[in-house]
Length: 467
Image 1 (cartoon, rainbow, N blue to C red):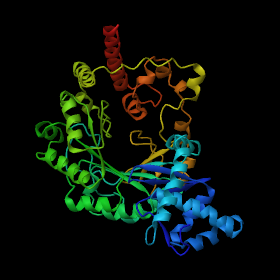
Image 2: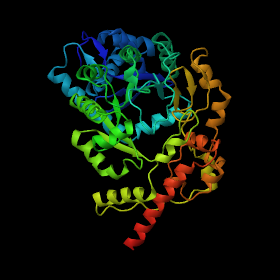
Image 3: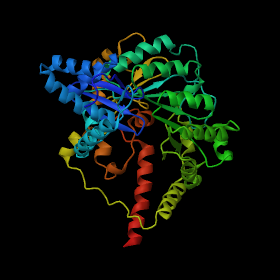
Image 4: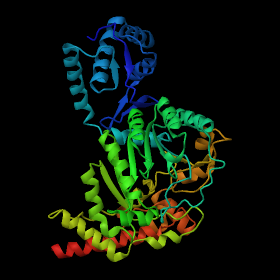
C-alpha cells in the first residue's frame, strides 16, 4: 500500500476533461489517452487540492458511502494504476514495493484496455453527445511568409482577439468538453503574447498542438514549448530543398529556418509532423521530402492534394494543382519504395441503408473553429458563420445554431453525386472545399473527384499488370 501520508498530484503535463460519466485524460509524453470511470473521476477532480492518500481515502468513503477499509483498497488499486501510467506523481517517489505493486496493477489494467479501441470509443462518445473534442483557434491572420497556395489573403491585425478576449473563450471551450486545442494562424508565433495564451491553455488543462511554418522557432521558443507539454507541432515543408520551398513561400531562407525549427523541437523530444500540399511546383520531390522527414527524426509526414480556395472567394491558387502525370509518377515512386506491397482491393459497395447512416464529414460533430476575430465556424474549411464568440456564449452557438444542426444532419445519402459514386470510399472529399467550388455543401468537390479518379485509374492499371 502506498503510504497514507504521501501527497498526490496530477501530472502537470497531463491534459484532462470531464465528460458525462467519465473523465478523459491525455498524456503527450507517450501519446496515451485514458478513460476514468465515476470513482476514478471523483478522485481525479479531488487531486487539484494535492491531498494526501489518507485524505483521498476519506473523500472516497464519504463520496460513495462505503467504509474506510473498502475505500482504502479501492484507492490503493487506483493510485497504483495512475502512478504506473504516469498520470499522477507522489511526493518522494515510489519505493521498491510500491513500484512493484503499481507495475503489476498497470499490467492487468492495460491487458483489459487492449481489448477496447479506446480512442475510437472516446471519439464516438464525443460525436454522440456533440462534444467539441477538437478546437482550432486561429490566433492571427498575420504571417511572416507569403505562400503562393495559402487561403488567407487579408492580414489585418486590427480587430483580432486580445488576450483578455481569448481567455474566456478558452474557459468556455473547457466547459464544453474540448480536450484537444490547436493554435494556428496565419503564423501563431507572430503574436507577441503567444506564450501567455499557451500558458493559460495549459492552466485549463488543454492538450495543445501548434500549426506553424517553423521559421520563428528558436532554442528559447523550443524550450518553452517543451515546458508547456506541447503535444505536437505540424510544420509545413514545401520542398526537399531551399530553392523549391522558398519559391513557394516567397521568402528566401525560410527552408533552412523551418528545418532548423523542426530539429530544435525534435531534439527536445517534441512530436513533429512535417506536412505539405502537393503542387506542380513540388510534387516531383515527394520521395525526397519524405526522406527528409525521416532523416531529421520527424514523427510522421503527410501530404495532401487538395488546395483550399482563398477566403476572399478567389480560386486562383487552384491553378497550382499538380498535373495528372505528376500525380501518377508520385504513386509509382511510392510503389517502387515498397516493392512487393499488395495493392488495396476495391472496398465492397455500400447499401442504401448504410448510406443513410454514414456521416460524410465530422464538421460540427466533434470539431469547431474560431478565427482571429472571434467568428465561430464548424471546422477549418467550412466558412459557414455560426456566431460571434465575443458577443454570444459558445454553448449557445454550439447547441443552438440552426446552421450547425443542418450540417450535423447531413448523411451520405444526402450527397446525390457522391452517394452514387463507386469511388466514394477512396475519396478525400472536403465539404468546405465543395462549398467553395460549387456553392453547396452537398455537392461533389471537383478537385477531390479529379484526384480520386486519377488515383483509381492508376491502381486499376497496376492491378491489370499484376494479373
